[in-house]
Amino acid sequence: MTSIEKVPFVDLVTPHQELQTELVEAFKLALRTASFVGGPAVEGFERDFAEFCGAKHCIGVGSGTDALRFALTAAGVQPGDIVLTVPLTFIATTEAISQAGARIDFVDVDARTCTVDPEKLRHYFEKHCVEDRASGRMIHRSLGKPVTAVVPVHLHGQTADMDPILEIAARYKLTVIEDACQAHGAAYFSRKENRWRKAGTMGQAAAFSFYPGKNLGACGEAGAVTTDDESIAGRIRMLRDHGQSKKYFHEIEGYNGRLDSIQAAILRIKLRHLARWNEQRSKAAKLYQEFLAPMSGSLILPYQPSWSQPVYHLYVVRTANRYELQKHLNDAGIGTGIHYPIPLHLQAAYANMGWKRGDFPVAEETAEQIVSLPMLLG
Ligand SMILES: Cc1ncc(COP(=O)(O)O)c(C=O)c1O
Image (cartoon, rainbow, N blue to C red; front, side, top):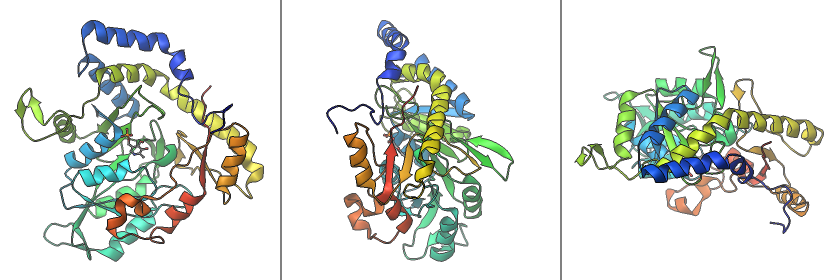
């Protein structure tokens, strides 16, 4: 980082200063009422966020990672199942799969959208799996385990191409859990249903992160699951709260994964500004698009398909000279990031899984070329 950063990669100070009076009031109310766990702030935020997404239920939890893990378990993923996702995502996606007891497997991304390539997903089943007549489940031939779920990741604020994914999921009896941790408010035009659908309403359940740098960020850790399925919602309410249906009646072993009440109160205030902030991100992306278009020979700009209304959590360009570009911007006092530099199948954490360079070439090449440019509001 330069000593004087004129343009930070992300500015978490200004939006909080603008809302400081309201945020401090929310904190004071929590102190006055000693409302720290559960209560009206959590319930109010859950109602408001469900409405924002157009989902029937929202269950506040401790983080996006909790949200993914609880959603997988509550939707029926069993220890020993195989759950598919992409190698170009934050490791929380795969941590949640492993922590739900399942085995991770990957499908490569599409080069233009950086989200799961539906044709490769189809190919995975046609090439590697065989149907088990008794259960109707798809069994991975060499791993000998059922493939029961897929986690499409709505990366950088843009949804995956959900129509073909949902069609493949219906055909092969897969549970779909959206990783919407970077996509609060993103929309997808379903050609099949001829309507726009919001991130968080397309799978059996969806996970959101409210990590501070997200489009909707807490002042600490927080997350949520959205779902239209009453029984999934009920199971997540138990999982987040030590498996109890009422105090000290534990139906299952769960976790300490509740949404903190102060964070919920803060999120509720910030949620009122989310649509406007998302709009500002789109405007900033449009400006980038205009300014950078003449450099399209050396810089690949984000691809926005006609079916996508992204919320630009990140504005990610691609170039063969990524480190040169970063250095040049850094010297000019402009912060950048890389999301993410090493695809998950090549991470040390998964060295024992047998994946190697070349297994997911699109994710590998993308990870070598991407640079995230500053995304500032206002
Ligand atoms: C794609 C993706 N999945 C999952 C997560 C996990 O969220 P959290 O950090 O709130 O646990 C994040 C957030 O960093 C993310 O970007």
